[in-house]
Length: 102
Image (cartoon, rainbow, N blue to C red; front, side, top):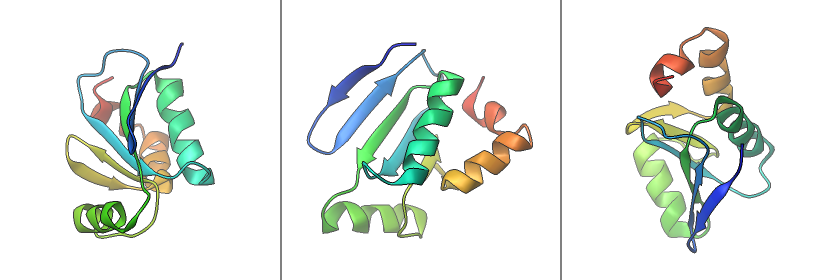
């Protein structure tokens, strides 16, 4: 798999294969759980948009959308799934692939 990264000041889109779902992850660069989530999506070959949370405006947006103020926060088709622990639990139960459409 190769990384095709489009970078703006606050967003990155990482594509591996075409994805039928819209996956968005709010994260920070060095957060270990953000790194785990990135690896999980890469392993599954899922394209995702990452919004690098920096500055009060993005933290407020994150909290408004998810009700949480921690990263990562992951959304699939605008549904808040929570953080890495939440998607890892879904993956162990075999439910994440269905949400990802794979």
